[in-house]
Length: 280
Ligand code: SAM
Image 1: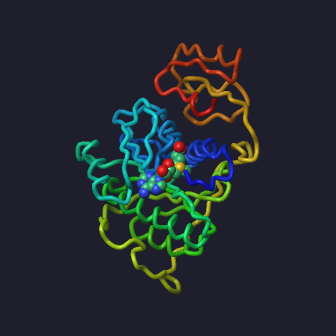
Image 2: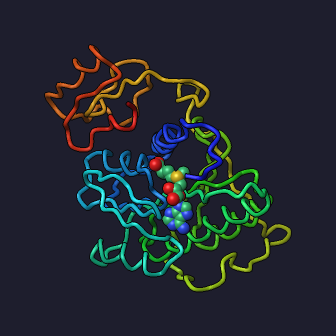
């Protein structure tokens, strides 16, 4: 995560963002293979790995930084701008393409605004680039976008070259960024070409206007609030936090509820994929 992170709770916001997008778009429906680009420290991978009915194929998580091991998540310590990383992902899926690629990438910042904005945009293009190598036709790509960027219109145009349906959504837990999502038209590899795609925005009526969708309703997570640490080891909600759609599919006989009620800040859960590290 970039050094400029304004708030140490960013990692919590990160998980909420993906949960809220799932609530709004049912991103995980029918997903058998998922890739988490720029995944460290791993909250999005944890959310993905816990989506019902659970991962039949491991989720592949890529980051420059090492991550702590996560059940059901295969980790690649690598650079998403490299063709070799795309090949590693393909190898892990034994040549099968992924149904979903998510990217929450953020470069370390220099403090020079224009340069930082440029690098962030290039990282997103790198994510799009690698996605064209690993995502199946009709699959979904979800990426964090900086709304404040001057070139956001250009970005939409670039995304629409690959995805017939591009949507911007701002989850309530997101403070200043957003998500673009849409099914892929098909892989159009461009790894190796100069970053930036050298495209001009389309003029006049051809200019792409992405629909804006505010994600979630007023009962969603609020980034300006601190929430009680109420998720138990199998994701049952004990109190306070709105239910993600998958909490009803919890493991039978979960013993975590009691423990969490007695001592809500310390989840002693041992279930595979327990989300306690996220919340505690
Ligand atoms: N989604 C993550 C989570 O929920 O835990 C948080 C991701 S953090 C905001 C951004 C990550 O992007 C950092 O871990 C950073 O190492 C990674 N990153 C930046 N540039 C990268 C690159 N070229 N290749 C792979 N990862 C990169």
